[in-house]
Image 1: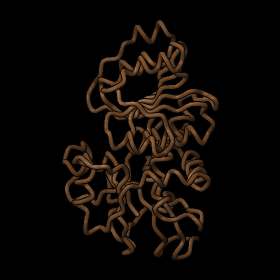
Image 2 (image 1 turned 90 degrees about the horizontal axis):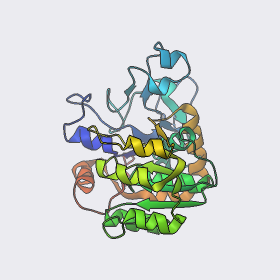
Image 3 (image 1 turned 30 degrees about the vertical axis):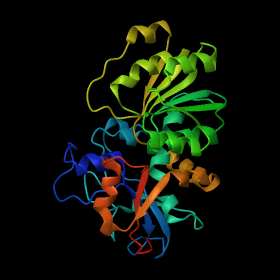
Image 4 (image 1 turned 90 degrees about the vertical axis):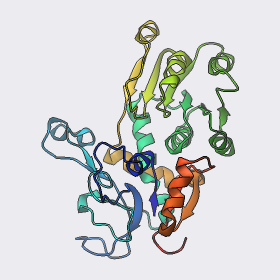
Length: 305
């Protein structure tokens, strides 16, 4: 099973700065061992941590290989999971619980992103959280926040289909085109703002609301990858004495926690809106590049789709 993510869309469009021609893309995937593993027998269910660190730079040698100075990823810098068979380093293989369906295992990577965000971002169980963006990462983040004890989680999104999905998952979701964000925040928090605000949207227009909607001495976590420089009101950050944390990918521990969450909370699976055979690859990408209700699109290489 392989999921399409935003990075795959940029590779598909030919705009990713590192991906080269003739690449087999895909870094969110699960499957079974065919052969070659020194200890796992054929048929073992696995997923793959796609990070490829050098092991020699300062981040790597000080315990932070996820921010390796020359970090590469399977499916971006070398061939990945959009194939019937995939060859990956043994150290990148992560065993799945035997009872976990492969489609759920394919969500381990995006859920690990959200685990890393809340672990690094200063979130504390009981916090009230505001999430900008209801794509795969935004919805997974909201589910992770709820699963780890957030007292309130609100999602801000302009796409009507994604708003509907957020509401189906039981979240309060607002469209800033219909409901001004700060009017909602001031009413909901008596003017104080949210404890944690997460930017999963990656749009410059979002940043002003991010800075305004967080409480004094609150925490902002930037998960989205901005493609161009964006304006940030640093004076607002100073006056409110805010903490702004940028996060990237995940650690091995984040992957372990993600798998535990996926085993305990079946709602993550609800973000999978389409499962297609690989022969319908173009249709899968069309779902995510054109107007549709798609959130997470998977390709099923088992022949069962």
